[in-house]
Image (cartoon, rainbow, N blue to C red; front, side, top):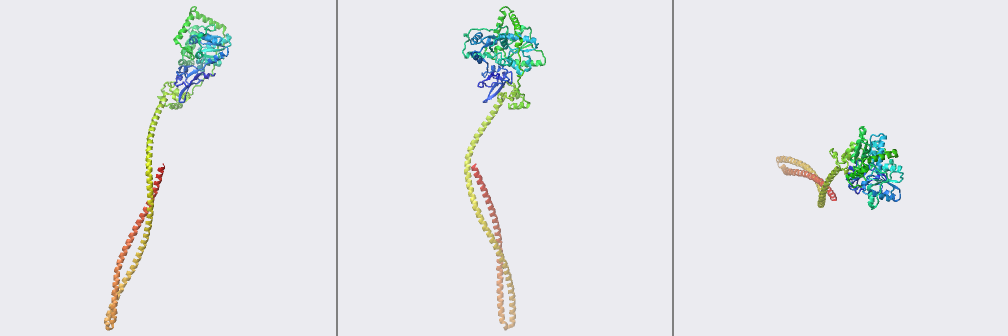
Length: 637
C-alpha cells in the first residue's frame, strides 16, 4: 500500500463544511472540488503530514484512514511468525489490556514488548547523542507528524531533529539485534502517522504492521471477540522505568529531568501551537538566539494517549491520575529512591549492553514540498473579481467559512485549484443576489412574455380582422384599379376625340380665314361695282343730257341712257346691299373665328387636363398595385 492512500475520503458523507481545512496546520494539504454542484474536500497526500486533525474535526464520518490491522490478522491466520510492540497508550485505551495481550498470544503472536521500555532506551540515546555529538538544541521525534512536517516544510531543521530513532523503532531494533527475535513486528499504535515512519526507507523495515487501536477495537467488535474470556498476559521485556510517561504531554521532559537536573526542555503540544512554534524556532536559529536543549513536541494536544488512532474514552484528568498513580506506586514500592535506582540500573545496562550507533536515525532531505504558487497582483485581482470581491473591504472579510480565515489565502487556493469559488460565503451571498436578480428578471420576463403572449393573441385576432380588411381593401383597390383602367381608356378616347376636334377646329379656322380672304376680295369687287355703277350713272346722265340736246334723234339713245341709268342704280343697290351683308358676314366670321379660337384654347385646356388626369390615374394605379403588394405581404406575414 502506498503512503498516498493513508487518509481516505467518503464523498457521500462529505458536506463541504471545510472544518478539515480550518483545522489542518498545512493550508495546501486539502483540495476542495465539486461533485454535481456539491463541495467536497480531500487530502493532498503528498502535502499531508498525517496529523489527523481533519479526521477528528469531521462530524460527518467523511474522513477515515487505513492501517495494517486486517493484514496483520490475515498473516497470523496463515501462520506467519509475528511479535508485537505495544505503545504505552494501550494502558488507557484498553481497560483489559493484559487480556488483549492474552488474546493476541492465543491467536499466534509470539513475544510482546512494551514500547515504554523503548522510550527509556530513547531517552538514554538522546542524552548520549547530545553529549557525544555536542548538540546544542534537539527536536524530539517520537511523533511522525512532526518529522513529516520538518522533512516536507522545514528541511532546514532536519539537522536539529534528534539523531535517534523513536521509542517504537528503538524497541524494534533492541528486539531484533539484542533479543534475536526474527519475527515480523507489529506495532499496537495510537497513531495514524506511524504508517509513514514504518514505511520510511530510513527505518529499514524493522516494523511491518501499524495496527492502530481504533481499527483493532473495530476488528474485535466485528468478530465478536470477548476479551474477558482470555487469560491475562504481561510483557516479555525486562521492564521499564519512566518510559511509559512518553505517551502523555511532557512525558519526555519528565524522563530527561529525572536524569538531568535543570535541563531546559521546551514542552509543546497541539496542531495549533507546535507548527507555529517550529517556525519561530527556525527564525531563532537564524538569528542565533538562545534555544532549549530539547523540544518535547507532540502533534496531538493531549499526547499519544489521545492520539489520532485511539479509542480512549477516559478524560485527560482520568488518564493523568492513572499515570500519576502508577508513578507513585513505582516510586514507593521500595522507597523513594526506587525510580532513581531503576534509572541508574537501566542506564548502566544500556551503557554496557547497547551500541548507540544501532539506534541512530537519519532523515531524508529530498522530501521538501513545493508550496502553492504565489499569484501576481494582477492574478490576485482577477481571482478576487471571480469571487465577486471588487473592493478592498470585501477582500479583507477574513471569515472562517472557507476554512482559511483569510480572503487572500482563499484567493491563492482558488488560483492554485486547491479550492472552489462556492466555498467562499461572500461569493455565495453575491451569487444569491445575482440569482435573485436573475429570478426577478426572469419573473419580469415571464410576466412580459405573458403580456406578449396575450398581446400576440390579441394581435392574431387583430391580424385576422386586419387580414379581412386588407382583403377587402385589395378587392376595393382592384375595383378602383379596374375603374381607373376603364377611366384611362375613356380618357384616352376623349383625348383622341378632342385631338380630332382640334384638327377640325384648325380646318374650320383655316376655312374661315379662306372665306374671309375671299370675302375681302368679293368686297373689293363690290366696291369696284359700286364705283363702276356710279361712273355708269354719270355716263347715263351725260347720255341723257346729250340725248336731250339731240332732240328727237336722241330719244332712242335717251331711252338707252335711261335704262343704263336704271341698271346703274340697280347695280349700285345690289352692290351696296352686298356690302352691308358683307360687313355682317365679316362680323359673323370674326365672331366664328373668335369662338373657334376660344374653343381651341378650351380644347387645349381640356386636353392638358385629360393628360394630367391620365397621369394621375396611372400614378393611382401604380400606387394601388403597391398597396395590393404590401397588403399581400402583410397577409403572408
